[in-house]
Length: 239
Image 1 (cartoon, helix red, strand yellow):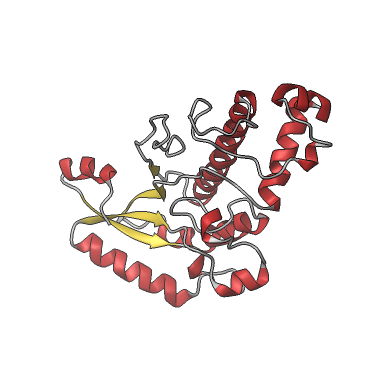
Image 2 (spheres, helix red, strand yellow):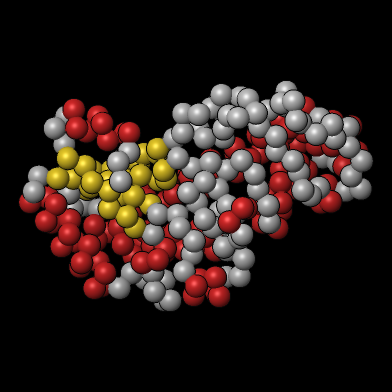
């Protein structure tokens, strides 16, 4: 697939092609089979012989059935997923799986002359979150910021009985949007927006760091949406 970031490569006379990797490559021992790696290396060598380079593209499709069976809930309903990311990034098993993939695969391909860069994601957007793992993180974040439920309620104008009872938090795109629920204060919107951005950034920082653990000189990139206008129709979580 074409990515806008490849335009600079064309200007430099580099033919860049995506080469996808993902959790689907792991077997149930959390390793990438040798045959899979050999096929990948063969394809990369053919590209290198044709003077092409590859962008290792991290695929964020839904987890394979065996993963869902082993780690229930890792694939949430589609309407609860991020844009182009079809699993729960907050599920503890997700980081274990990506770490296993990188440890099994990257030492064998990272030094190949065809490798140009690593693309962490294509236009990821996470305008909302749900699930027990995300809310557990939110509760810890709120407790660290406010210290008590009374302080939280005073800031938000809410009446929660405890910080752990915060659920179903609305995420309007803008605190000034005309459709913002009256129950959502601007202070609440700012807190949830900040938490959400930190939550997602932490995940991609993890992927970046794990790649560098296995490939010290790797160039890690992200393809970000430029639709960041704040309006009822905008998508401020693109970047």
